[in-house]
Length: 229
Image (cartoon, rainbow, N blue to C red; front, top):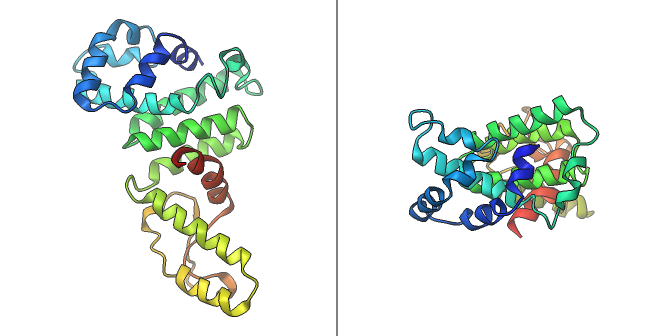
């Protein structure tokens, strides 16, 4: 948990707030001016072991993703006094493994929005208990497998499709909604685990096409909407 605690303390907190939206040139200068500060943060200092271990560009990219992640876990949401209780129901070993896996997944994510999604997921899981630790671990993988440019838009389309189907009671209108929804392109989410994929049949009884599953709905409502609104 040290990497979280240290990232939320002054002046590290100010640094991460400042760099989240910086362009590469400004980001590199900010990192250069704050190298000693970053070297004191567990989970960040390894970026500065040596040029051969991690390129300057990769280091900057990771720091920007960490900034987006930590921006969803800030003092306003989870005050620093509660940090020690954040994963109170898990053993020290399990909590350390979760943080370690979180850092590893952030390193693999392609962009900042995925880092923000993971930060919000972390907050919803370990502060609000909306998700279980098992769901958190599973959804870390789901976030990685979202298409980096069209994944969120695609998830929104499937969410709205399901909402429309569940709200409509008229059989004919449901048929029209189903017909349009069954044509949705699910390739941006095909391996994410957030959809129930087609199994071959295409009747209205089994909805046809792909369909957002329960964990996909929960993820969209509790995580995505809190990041894009």
